[in-house]
Image (tube, rainbow, N blue to C red):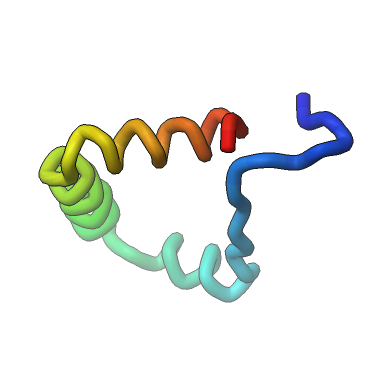
Length: 59
């Protein structure tokens, strides 16, 4: 649960973006997710630690 001092990051996805994503074939959705995972694995360890800290609201 978030406290009164928000940390981390947030982003907004529009209803239109969600509807468009749902029209993608499953194979395209999976390819998109796999590409993101591959990109993340290629990042330096320190960058991944920083990203994880933001995700956990530690920064």
